[in-house]
Amino acid sequence: MNYLFKKIRIINPFQNLDEIADLWIKDGVIVKIAKEISTTDNDIEIIDSQTLVASPGFFDMHVHFRDPGFEYKEDLRTGAESAANGGFTGVLIMPNTKPPIHDKTVVEYIKSNTQNSIVDIYISGTITQNQEGKLISNMLEMNEHGVKLFTDDGKCVMNSDVMRRAFDYATPKDLLISQHCEDIFLTEGFDMNESEISVKLGLKGYPSIAEEVILYRDILLSEYCGNRRYHAQHLSTQNSVDLIRYAKRKGLRVTCEVTPHHFSLTEDTLTSYNTNFKMNPPLRKANDLQAIKEGLKDGTIDVIATDHAPHSNLEKEVEFDKAPNGIIGLETAFGLSVTHLVEENWLTINQLIEKMSVNPRKILHLPPISFQENLQANITIFDPKEEWIVNKTNFKSKSQNTPFDNLKLKGKVKFIFNNNKVYKSSL
Ligand code: DOR
Ligand code: ZN
Image 1 (cartoon, protein in one colour):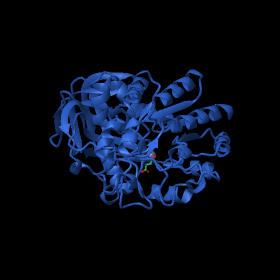
Image 2 (cartoon, protein in one colour):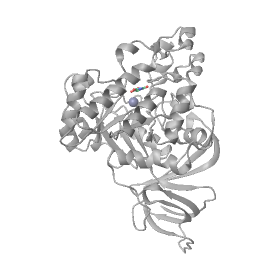
Image 3 (cartoon, helix red, strand yellow):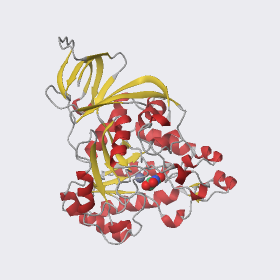
Image 4 (cartoon, protein in one colour):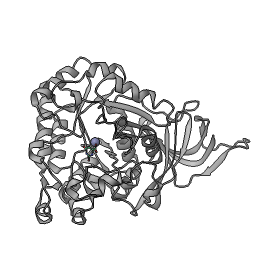
């Protein structure tokens, strides 16, 4: 492996770097960065980079790889390849597997099956045993085995006393507690957002307050328990953005993420009854979309994460109310972000890199990434100007449940470099 990128724009917020230079990567190591590199190496691919950008490798802190237990939807290998194809050099996998990631045995199973991956696979563990919301999992032990974040994602820890104990339990090691915010008593049997449209379509609604009451409760609990670290997952409503803004102003150690589908789509798409628009939390209204974009712009929202949630065709091609929640997202995240955020002037490309690479790593206390000679490359190369049509048959995910097939996007991933390997995107 030997690549020379001529006149590429290197952006690395970790180093306050934004410059045009030649970048030479050989056998996964950055050999040289300089204004002009000439080489007598024969066996080298020289790439005239024009509009290309080299950024620290993207990191998705919310993916479901379904392994162990649901490998027909995705497994650790196909999940990692899907991530690589979408430009991610690192991911955090969610623990709602079967068995759930709630003890060191499952953690070790995943570690031993992801050893030679180009994508760094980090593991989250459950807050409660079997995600039942009752007994706290052995978070300290899982943390000793490398688990960085704790969540019952897919489910919400409803019981406030259990949540309080989770924060207390996290205190000695300052562990990161994270939540899928959903008051399940307000959402039972839901199909979509609760609105005039859900009434018209005859679909059961999920009111936005179901997310907001839990988010506010958790913000209060995290403060009450001594200003604990708390990360809110896949927020979807205007009031949620306001609540995070309030928490940050107060100096609380609260962070949050949003998904590309929640800033690209509204509930209006549900009129098609296409189950690839069905997810949890559901698509919301135009004012929520607007609030999310404003929250991304003013720094209230720290991270863009996909909630990559593969399901088989057999499971999704059923009546709307019977279909499982979730869509895949790894291979469209960057294109959707450039199209809806950069092209619409909500974020600069540098700010997008912060949301897709820098901030998730900071939140998880992972080491920063450097562009430095003789250092192993952890890099995503992309073209922010290239237009392309999404073709789900080019995806590497085992599942195809995307609402974005055939959509024209701007911004395309080209390569990732990590762990001394290279991956050429085939989107
Ligand atoms: O849409 C979703 N799918 N939301 C979740 O919270 C869980 C996920 C899944 O695991 O399928
Ligand atoms: Zn999820």
